[in-house]
Image (spheres, rainbow, N blue to C red):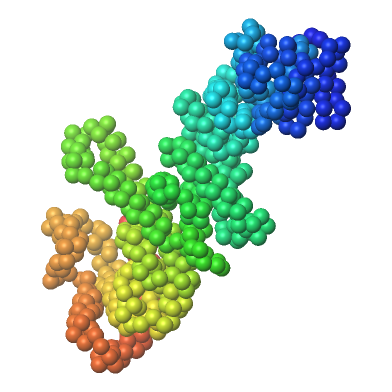
Length: 621
C-alpha cells in the first residue's frame, strides 16, 4: 500500500468531546460544524486555500456564529485532513482516504485557483503517479468511489480508476497478464473485481472488452465468478425467505438489484460461442424469468442457448415459470419452445449452406477432375453435416427427456406438450421410444383426457420408429387410442412378416455342398453379374423381378391389411366400428407374440446355414 505525507508541522489539534480545537496562542475566530463535530479554527489559514469558505464568509458577514456544512463528503475526518493541510500539519494520504479527501477538497474549493500547490492538485498527482499504477491500490481506490458516486463522476475520479484497472487487466506485459487461461478456472483478477458493485463492475468489463486483449473464455469465466458471488439461484423459495426475514421492501429492493445484475451480465457476454457454458446461460435465463428481466435480455439468452443447445442436459432445461401464485413454480414450457424454434432455424440455415446444389455440383466436378483440394473440401463439408446431424440427435434425446419430466406435472397443458414434441424435426429422433414413454406418462397423469385429446397427443408419435419392446408395450397399453394400437400392431406384423420371409428364403434356397463348390469353382458370367447388380436397384425402387427368390408375400399382405384397416377406421371413427377393431387388435396381439418367436427360429436357421457355408469357402480360398 502506497502512502503520501503532506506538511511538516506537528499536530496541534486536540479534542474535547464533540469539539476540536487548535492549540495556539492566538484565539480562534471561526467555528465550523461538520457532521455533529464543532471545529474552532482560524480564518486566515483556511480562507487562503478554500475558495468556498471565502465566498461563504463574504455572504454571512463577520458574524461569530458557527458555519454549518451539511452533507459534507467524507464527514468530520475528511474535513480535519483538509484543515490540517491548511495549517501545514503533517497528514497521511493513502488508498483508504484519498477519495474522501479529494471530494472534500473539491467541496471546499481547494484548487489551484485559490493557491498554487493546493490539496486537490497534489491528490490528483498522487493518484496518477502512484496509486493507480498498482493493482491492489487501484482496486481499493475504485471501491471507495461508491460512497461518493455523483461527486466522483463529476470530478472524473471514477473514470480514471476504471481505466486504470482495465489497463492493468489488459496489459499482458505488466503485473496483470491477460493470457488465455489454461483451465476452466476463472482468471486471477476475476475474484478481485467480483467485490465491485454491479455498476463499477460493468464499467470495468466494458473497458476490458474494448481493449480487445483478453480472451473471450477468460471474460466468460470472470462473468461466471461474478454471478456466483452476487446472484443467488433464482427460486421462489429463496425470495420468499427474503420477504420473511427482511420485509417486502427489502425483498423488492433485492429483486431489483438482481434483475439489474442479470441484465448487465447478459450485456457483457462475449460473442464467442463457447465463451460460457450452456448451463450458465440457462441459469441466467431462469433468473431472468423469476426476476422479470427485460424481453431483450431474455431474447438474447434464448439465442445464445440455442447456439449450443446440444451441450446441455435436461435438468438445466427445467426453467421455472414466472408466476405470482404460491407453492412450487411450474416449468416454463414456452421458453423451451422458443429455444427449440431458434435452434431449428439455425440448423436449417446451416443445412441450406452445407447441402446446397452448388456445393453438390462442386463435389461432382472435383471427383471428375480428381482435385485433391476439392476432395478435402468435400470431406470437410460431409464432416460438418455429420456433426450437425449428431447435434440434432442429441437435441432430440434432450427434448424427449424434458417431455418425460414435464409430463409428470399435472399443470402442463396439452397444447404445450404437443408444441415441444413438434418443435424437433423428425430426423432428430431415430427412435420414438423415449417420446412414447413421455406420452404414456402424460396419459397416466391425466386420466381425465377425452378421446379427441388422446388422439391429438398421439399424432406426434411415429409407430414405425418404435422398437420391438416399445411396440409390445404399446400393443397392450389401454390408455392409447385404438387407432394407434392398430398401427403399432400392423407395423410390427409387417416387420415380422418381412423377417419371416427372409428366413424362408434362406431355408428353402440354400444350396447344397456340391452347389456351393460349383458356384465357387467356376467364374461368374457377365449376365449373372449384371443381374446381381440390377437386383438391389430394383428392390430399392420397389420392383421385384418374377424370378427373384426373395419372398415378399408377407410384407405385401401386411401392407394390404394396413391399407384396408386404415380405410375402415376413416369410414367409421365412432364407437360403432370400435368392436370390430378391438377384435382385430386381440387377434393381432396374439400373433405378435408368435411372430417374435418365429424371428428367433428364422435367425437360428440363418446362423446354422452360414456356419455350413463358411468352412467350405475357406477351403476353396
